[in-house]
Image 1 (cartoon, one colour):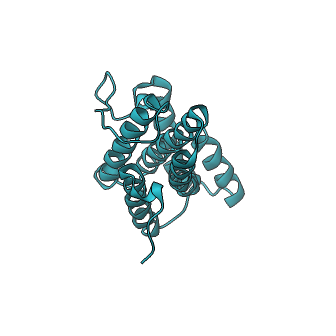
Image 2: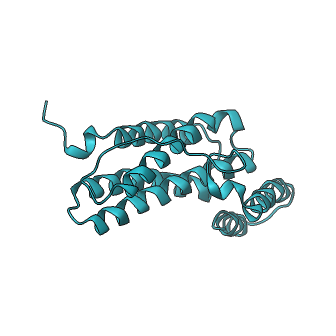
Length: 177
């Protein structure tokens, strides 16, 4: 067996790998694919790629950018899981472990960004919003309204005979909020 790369030893990277496995299990059981599925695939892979880049970056500013990108991708993944629930593709309890894992990843990434002047290391700080949600964007009223729109629109589209192209465009536009 070969010696692991430096980023592979990081707990945050290993958690990212666990999330990719969890994501794959969630997606392979879906009866239909929506835009959020593609976002989830790309976002989860982006978490890992940006952590690897950050662990190799020598410049603190460069490390901060890569860690910020990884953090943004983790938040995107959390939002995609919310979209799946809003579209009744998954039940809240089915995505709970994924969101908890993402919250751990975000917590570590935030701490890593704060200490980016040093080489990469992992301290762990509790991450929670003022309203008790896992992520800041979940506290936003506009985010909650957007999820309600997605939850309302999905069953409406199923009732009417819309072209696949129109359904796909509505799905992509509501998921891109």
